[in-house]
Image (tube, rainbow, N blue to C red; front, top):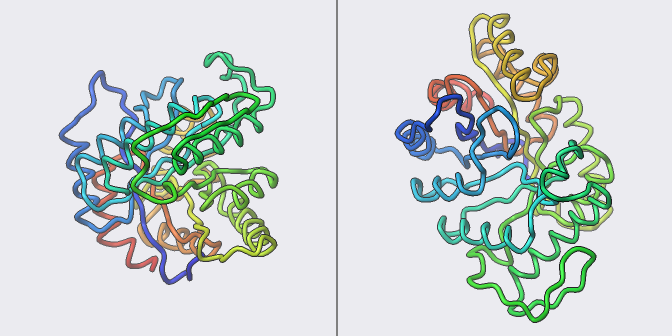
Length: 310
């Protein structure tokens, strides 16, 4: 965990579309401008089912890899228990290869167990499915031949090539809420990223838990990253900004009230002050996630927000 003075800034990739077709030109310009402006990374998230029109995250990262050269490429988070760990290991390796080693893999359980039947799965023993899947992926990424006799995956002298560019494998960051999940993050992962749907106070508590578990494990704190996704809307009229965010949170999360609890909204000065609080709570990387006027916000962040927060 680095010092607060070294805070980095990331930006969420425009991923939700209500129109029949994606504006590929706008997407390309956004990604390339984020790189020009010096963002640390760009991030996507996963929502396979739903009305939000969200693009599949791994495929989108592969597209982003082709359009950029330096930006790190992150996903927060993949609901890995819903995927085959063998297929996912291959897909993520491909993105890491196509990006020349710029991938960050965010993983999580997710909170909606009702979607498991849509994937032909049962939510029972999902924690075991989750941890076993991570072990399978790590082995396929690091071992020439893998024999594995798990509860959900069986491999006999299996090979997967090529390996990821990053060694031993792309960094794995966890999204988590429950204290047991935070403990797993420290035991199995390389970083923790607070959810956009969690408040600053909740994130502060989670950071305290992370730091305690890191200390108990004896690992070097500098090897474990801390980040936070922040839904944000800069508007000189805060009431108007909050109203727009309430509409969006109702559409995407089905919970309009969440906007006032977790999002940052208002003038540049007000947003800077709230981002400083999140930084002070422990965030070493701030993943800024505007949900309207993404290009305007990107330019505004680079011009007026990032330096002020630093």
